[in-house]
Image (cartoon, rainbow, N blue to C red):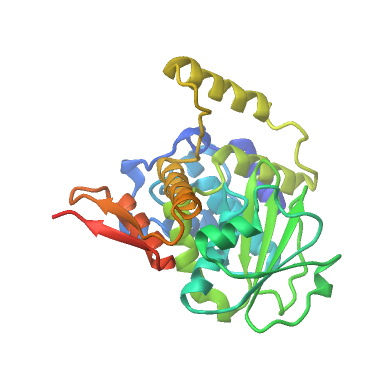
Length: 321
């Protein structure tokens, strides 16, 4: 499998790294989530990896936030290595959203959650802010290795920060295994048939609040996988590029405020909504929070507002006539 992936990476169509929406000439919406991998696996079984054959594959999903060819291949490869269904592997550009997606589901079904981690959690994971702003409840526990995870009545999320993509020993007492890859994103493994009903809702969170791991980052991750190597120390001068983007925004707008950049329009919009809730909770304690939704509101925005309101009894959606 790894040798085949190596050939694929040497021959990938240029559009796989640059196209962020679907190609209508090879796109069938009804089969968008399945057709690409089905056809890709046929090529794998025949050991065909030339550029023209790969370029003729039907487009994966419809937008980058749902998935794209390289994220699908990365998820398929990780599933193959762990002997899992491909659907049980979900990649994210975000490091924290997979945790938040599980916490959201468990909040709605009144299920306990323990988050167990080795090493350190991402610096942006602020447990108190998450509990106060989102209303999510969980226990946080540190262990030296996954075999030290205590028994728990509820869902167990194991979080590991890694510099390589490798096969993880996922014991039966782990419901969700999250690998965080610094600067690349994260990959979630849904463990066990009893947890597969989470998959569609986790996918919906990715669709509404973030994106799949980007094509360039998936390409980097796949290269590290086939070479059995660590990720590059410097990923395309990432921090320098980020600073250039922020400086350019400030220069063009002439604004004094610090610009914020998200992975997609919906993700930055979600950040604004949750920021407003955090501000309201701090400055207007106990008062109701209402989001006004006009009748011509974009579907993603409309759905996002209702998803936030469903998790917080103090938040309500007001529909304009």
